[in-house]
Length: 90
Image (cartoon, rainbow, N blue to C red; front, side, top):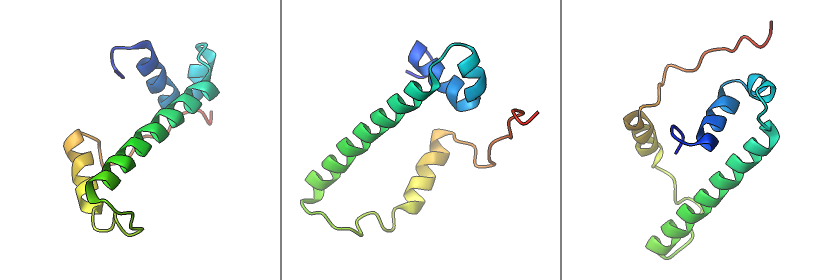
């Protein structure tokens, strides 16, 4: 979705350089709002699925899953070396 759709390319543009995306005609505020709404919806679905699986809501449910999360991020291909600074300060 992120690579082959207009919506995905706009997400990449806003994430890379919001100022340049604004100058290219992308409504940055609405794109951020849309991404946060989609993310909230997906988190809600995931939480509901987890609660349905274990049949109880415990506040300490996610403890101990940090290493699994880091492993998923690495397997997914995210660079752990950090991002680069943008040149918008010029």
